[in-house]
Structures are given as C-alpha cells and as structure tokens.
Image 1: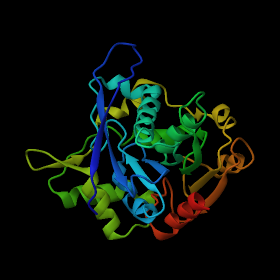
Image 2: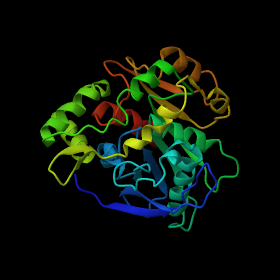
Image 3: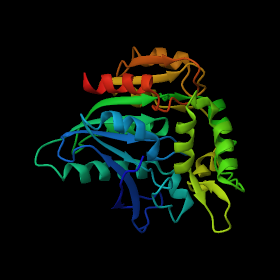
Image 4: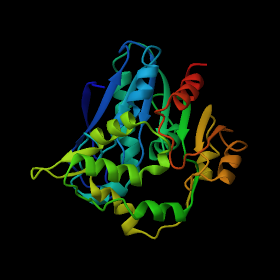
Length: 296
C-alpha cells in the first residue's frame, strides 16, 4: 500500500513556557479532499499512522481519512527536549493544529469523527471536552482505552518503551515486534509485514530499530507509576462513542468498560475475544464494526 505522506509545521508547546522551535507532524490523506466528512485517526503510544492503512482503504469511498503520526513517532519530527513529550497540552495543540489545517481547505464546516487506538483515543477523548473549540468532534471511536488505566498495565508498558533495541536484519526486527505485539491479536503475515515495514528504521550500519524516539518513555521514568484516573473528564463527554475492547486487555478492564456504558458518553462497547491491548482495526470484522458506526 503506497500513499502520500504530508507534513505540517506546528508550534511546540512546552511545560517550561520557553519559546521552542516548531516541529513537523506527518499525516496520510485518503479519499476525496473535497469530502466534508473527515475521519481523523490517531495511533497508540509507540505506533504510527500507517497502522490505519487498512481502515482508510475501507472508508475512503465514503469519507476523507487523515491519519497522523504523533510527534516523535513515524515520519514526524523528534522533539529537541525530551521533557516536552511529558506535556500533554502539546498533543492537544498538535491535534488542534491538524484539524484547523484541514478545516481551512473547505468552504463549509466539516463533519469530524475521531478514531483513536490507545493513546490516540485518549487524545480524542480529552480534545472532545475542550471548551471553545473551532470545530466539533461528532463521533468518537476508541480502541481499548478508557478513563481508568491501571498502574500494573502501565508498568508492563514501561518495561519495553524506550529501550531502543537494534537488530541485525529486518526479519529479526519483525520477529521481535511480533513477540512484543502479540496482544494485538491474530494478524495475517501481510499485516505483520506492513506494520514492520512502517515501524522499522534502518541505520547507517545496516541495523534496524524502531521508528520512534525512545525518549517518549520520559513519562514512565520521571514520575511514580500509578493509576491514571480520568473519570472526571469522561463524565463530561456527550459524543456518540464506540469502544472496542480486547477481552484479554490489562489497559481497559471489564469493570471500567461496564462503567463507561452508564457514565459520561454512555459508550457502546464491543468485546473482541482472543485480543489484548489493543485491537489494531486491521481485520475485516473490526473494520466493519468501525465503518458501520461511522456511517450509520
């Protein structure tokens, strides 16, 4: 699958309030650029925008699909100062800049839906409750994320994020990626290959590593790892919301998912057996669930 990757220069918000150089975020753009129904897709913590190629192909005849590389991942720039990765308003600012950039290409207001896997879902969730946005998020689709993330799951992630391993060959890299990503559930060899191609970075010495800045792990290193509790934010949500949950997930527990059905957005929950964290929205069944929710 080949598609054009665009780049957008955005300001760098920083916790220290100092003026920082702007950075580029990269994004793919699928479908008719005049279609006012726009779906923004945002990936998980260490992933990239090309995870959404399968979903985008399935949606592009009905929607324009914009899938973004979060800063420090994929084809987007790495930040000059590691601590800026730990400043969540930066991620909201980048997302707002992207939507405003897309909206400016239209003469009318776009109809905006948001698909987020894990971290990408959190960004959408927090963005949707911001006051005085110059746009409205219509529907939210979240893959395996909710308002309560247990510390035990965060510790598991902290064990591998930021290690920056190197591999002698692409095949070695792919096999390692498959092992640490086993919780994504059963994927075809083509899908694993697609993910590996867009996750790998080849170095000058011929070795392979991951295509993300290992310093994104700063959040896990600089503070005590404890539960992330965003129920107060969730309870403000009123958007129609679909949540896909892997039944083996340690990030989104069954108890949290049950609460999400009766609080805040009162989400529709779809459980997917044999999958942990997180459903990658690549197989036909998951794509159909998301497509039906967006288009109905």
